Image 1 (cartoon, rainbow, N blue to C red):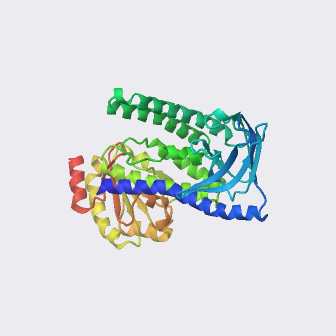
Image 2 (cartoon, one colour; image 1 turned 60 degrees about the vertical axis):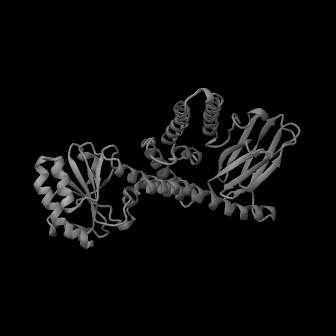
Length: 398
């Protein structure tokens, strides 16, 4: 059942991009109609020169789950020059396609005021567009070069498939894909607000499981999410990145909980009742029970005496509790700590209630909810309470 849930959630992650694409597409269909009737002024331009392509058409399209929606188009002049103008509502994901060839397209991003320039030859259109003029064009050039190498390695594997074992083919494909992933991750960490991260991030989205997925991808996705929320606030791209990151993190935690002792718990860094920031990672070296609760939660308060009992019994052996409150009232939170005699020193809350990002990050929909960590900060148990918690602690700390 857990495996199904992991895959199911991973499917939702991919769906997050579909949400962005559909949102942009529906708006662009309206944009196109307004452009044709003179109801909108062009706010972007794609121009340049493609040698040996006289008379061919260039199309800018928005992808969707039902095909593509036209945004703008233009014909290449006899001397190879072209100019396409159109209107986009905000930062989004598009294709620049040459003629009717489905394999002659470039994934691009566009936002208002972009002035993208292309200077290349027909034969190099896809792999070496030599783009300039935007904040993301150099990144696109480098990415398409990496993607070209990936395709060449993939083709070589296919040509030699008969002489290679299935294992060697799989290893070769994974190695080629890893190069793309490493490029995208490094670029996203270096320049998290770069618009082309919309496309790069697709390389970091897990496919069917997390078994061979690099968890450092989470950090890159997180940085881009934060940067987009700051720079592109209110735009579909920012909202989609936020939703995508939350879904991936939640799904990864679900996976981590099923493979004990191999995956670190997501970091928690929040204020304690005195306003001082406390970090979960600072407790490495101890066995830690991360306890999600709230003053208004009856079952949580009923479980508190047992958590206190476990703390007193095992604290001398290296056990502690890291309590995370889903309260939204500081006074009620502090009063509950005192009234229930929650004497361990680690109490934190962002006072956002169920709107706390930690709800999605840790993937729970009810409290009390607990996660048990080993001395390295890795997950070794989930939702342990009462006798089950005592049995596990007795096993770990005899």
